[in-house]
Image 1 (cartoon, rainbow, N blue to C red):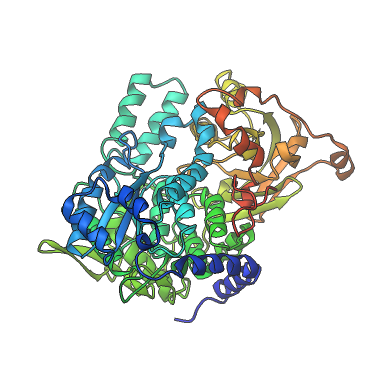
Image 2 (tube, rainbow, N blue to C red):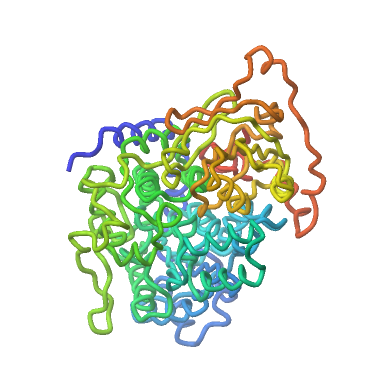
Length: 615
């Protein structure tokens, strides 16, 4: 199939824009890869002795002989995150499989992993976005011992996978495979969960009833099953060729899951520079792979958080993307899935309907993915149109289903749910922001109403509980950007705003903060940039200003006379309460140095080859 002209044009534009920084990045990778043999032979004998000291005698002998690869495991295991609890067993499986493949595997290091589900609406959420960069640095620390010939990254959730990938890309000469844990089995339906949350917001359900509902939804090991940021991560790892094909959505605790983990170790052992098929991660993540990730995000109605994370990931490989790229691709990429919050199904239903193999084959057939990319499986994305299965005791691959098993969840490119990807760039006198419209009904995509301005999400919730919001309005929640308070997700506002919308009011949200990847039906212009603390225009808004949010036209405007708007002063806010408690004191420098949302909300400044300078 001929490549989409739009995809070709956007990719060429990214390549041209990134030429200098990508060249710098690749030169660094080439320098790191220039030494022959195993990595460990280039450190001193004393260094090597420290690295092997705790190994079993047989493994120690293999490492000492320096003929076989040493695979580094970087894991985000903890048992508070349901998605990461299954990672506990994986290092043992990997080490066993590595030995069978003529390699050794070593646990290189752990990285932190916080749960946005636990911190949602709490002060700890203000550390969440910055934890991505902490994870990237922890990944670098783990690999800095410079005795590894390849990397297995174990992680699933929101900031963890982007952080692992940003860190791994600083070791671009190392082959790297991402190993997921898979989603938990299906609990109560997402619509029922949302219904109980709204009842609680109305005071018509008790806290005990709410807790019972939540625990029936989040009930076991594995990823939360809605299509938020964590599951969007897994989709992107496959579309970019960093997983084994079809690995994303196999449930934990199954034989197939374990065999996929073992197969990842065996595959990595075969693609180090000691073998015949050297595939460093720098060859996998290029401009085409980044464009493919954007397409996958749009075709599935994925998390808006990746309009931030993908920018930072790309920059770590010397590649510069911006929201214009997302917007232009969204106009031609069809929506092929309906997974909550864009529908009622969960990721288990998506996987059963045909999953990633079907999705990738449809996008390739429509010319909407670059098929000529390098992946951890070798040249070309065609292997990712297959699904894994157990052939006896071994994992094998077969072609994905020819037709969707459930067209209410997954459709072919010839019969999409929507002709576009449902992500829009909004522009106007309120700056640049993004909106995910794939979950917003058409009748709610244009809202013109007076502003009610809040400097904190708790102020909005207090006004809701006082009954002050039973009218048409646009909620402006400002001073929520990276520099102000770490750009927390404002998902706890969703039940209240959704209830008001259900009662017939025209409501919308405008903020320089984020929303959860699970947020859906209420129109929300988010990531407004520049943020208020950097002089962004949301800081000019006053209660009663008429705001027009038009997701169809891609505009966000304060309908205030131009002369009056130009003369208005920028408001300030007391952010002292966001500077301390739950460890926020330690993130002062992160807030002070963070770039804007469209620049990846990165704390790394200009230290990476891509353009992450503070906005």
